[in-house]
Image 1: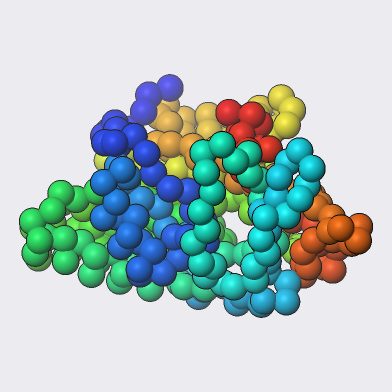
Image 2: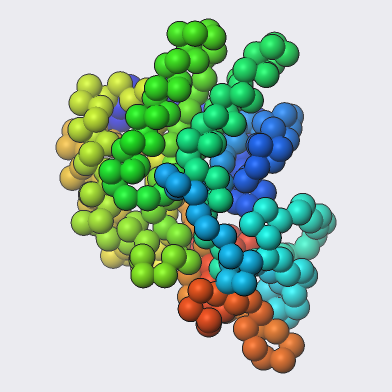
Length: 280
């Protein structure tokens, strides 16, 4: 199976952030973009109309995997920065949703960011815009990114490089199981994107953020969907591995759930050092 005509995904330096709460605001993205250690940046996952954050149910905490001692607890839609040392084996649990900002709001933030960097004569970094939603909404996001990238080139002579990450793996949305576990659900997202780019030019490179697959059949579902949707060429340019591991629970000292959640169980997504071996 051939790849498309897209450029090789080389980031220099080879470090970028994941789609997370510390990539939410304009200030977050500016700091990530200006950081000399990032070769690209990723926005927090966004929806067409933004996500309605509720402090009472959308929360996160850090904890030590060895003893489950908590290292902090937050409920804000945009949490403050917290520092750890390289020796800290820290994991996290969250019952968060998506960004309160919409996809179009992020595109406006990105446009202003690139314009300011052009005035300062700074190099342009690739930007991964993480999105979620229905297949029709994802396709519209793809077209919106394409239009902005073309407009920046034609009107400002800015050679922006946008990539779209389809987040099909969030475990915290009640009643909406992650589509990336199902071949048939994946095809609903992949086929429209292939049809929208029949020549394989792919002005916007597309990737999938997967959940943590735990057995071979789940990998087979993904590979089968990629092969069927792409026919003779791969429909995606990259895979982000992985999202958080759902159905996870951290208890407080009183043996009650450390967090609240929309269904009241405190069950959420596990990330950090405890998840790294599975992500690899």
